[in-house]
Length: 275
Image 1: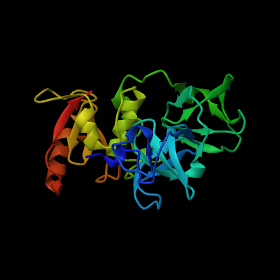
Image 2: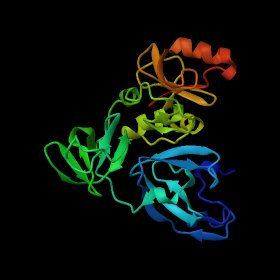
Image 3: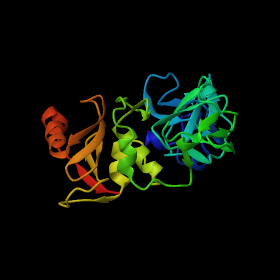
Image 4: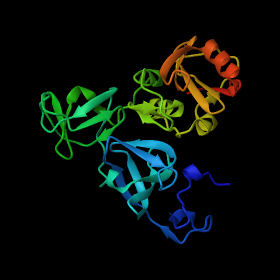
C-alpha cells in the first residue's frame, strides 16, 4: 500500500518513476521551483479544506501539475506531496544561507528603519548575492540582517537547542513555522537544521529516526512518541513539545507529560528513540 503523503500521483498525473506502479493519465518529469512567500500551506486537496504541512520561503519543490491556480508538488525537504497556491511559487535558486534565529525581517534596503517587506522564520532558505557589514542582500534585492543568517551547509549540532528557539510559538495543526507549529513540525525543524533527514509526521518519524531505547536514562535530544504525538527531551527530567494542551510549544516534566497524556485518553509512550 502506498502512502498518500509520499506518493506523487493524483490520478491525472504521476511522477515518471511511478509508471507501472500507479494509475495516471500522464507520467511526467517535474519542473523545479521553490516557495517565494514566508509560509505556504501544503494542502491534501486543491480545494484547500485540509492542510497536511507547511513550506517555508526558499523550500524547493518539484511541480508535477499546475491547474486552476494550484500546483501539485513534492517538497524537497521530506518528499511530502500536496497542493500549494501556484502564486506562492517561483524559479528555483540554490540557497546559500538559512535564517538561523527564531525570526527576522527582509528589508527593501540595508536599513533597519525602513518598513520590512517580509517576516521570515527559522529555517527559511535564501540565496545571498552580496554582503555588507550589517546586512546581506538576497536574490530579489531584499536585505536581511547579517547576524540572522547562517550558511546552509553548516549543520546545527544540538536538535534540542533548535527546538528551544520555538518556545512559546502557538500550536498550529500542520504548522511548520515560528508563526505556528505542531509536534512533528517542531521535531522536523530541529532535525533538519542538524542535517538529520526527517519526515513530517510523527508516525513516520517514529519509524525512521534514531535508534530505539528501552531503560536508558533520558538524554538531551531523546524523542518520546505517543500515538499521534512526539516530544523531545531537553534533559533527563524535562521535555519540550508543541501540544494542544498548552496550545503552544512548552516545557513539561517528562513524568508529568506521560501521566497527563495517558489520563486524557491518548495512551502510553509507544517508543523512545535517540538521535
